[in-house]
Image (cartoon, rainbow, N blue to C red; front, side, top):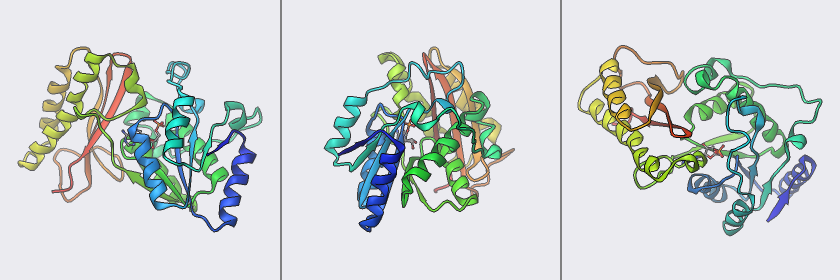
Length: 285
Ligand code: AMP
């Protein structure tokens, strides 16, 4: 497995793959890898000839009060996991390698970035769009793999790639969950055993709301009231948002759900030291 730490080494590796007529799959991550990340890697290995995974805790997507310094970093363990999967290359740059002192560019998709997670994390998605553009230009992948768990991020990247005709296919991959339904996340490490157990209620609530829609409930306010009631019963949980939104525009659906539309129920909560997000699709029935 090639371990690449400079932009130049990554570019050379990628050019070498193209010269050998190999398709390149790319999985960007911030490390502290779990089964969710590994599912993306497996998909890339399946769909492409060569796979490169990046591990970079991107400072530009953290707010000043956020967990940049305490974000879990488990490089040796991550490398061992990727090695067992037979990944071709891992890119692990330093912040200085990615952002030299004369780096000035930002990439932004404001219409999709300012509400939902963007409301409590101003600038977050600008940081994501900027680093993903930079990484795409270094790797020049044929396909890039992202988790549906971070649906707002996925929609922003899909839109950026479409608007700017970036020559890459973005592949969305399903959310991998713990046995109690909790979506896997590197930030779940911040939860106590009890909080981790209680956090299963997030997915369970979304499933319950979806079932209510399937039973004919279309009233957005009534659905949201039930959802908040369930979630706020979890000890220590604080709501960030619970919204019913159009999958494409990410705008709230109101006052009733039209099931011909692609609609999702999206949630973000604070529990203990963690901020947790999840969503469920209500269009497929
Ligand atoms: P992160 O390291 O949190 O930036 O995540 C890197 C990639 O893994 C992103 O595309 C995430 O959406 C994806 N990802 C994170 N958690 C999961 C999960 N539980 N299931 C599927 N994909 C995930």
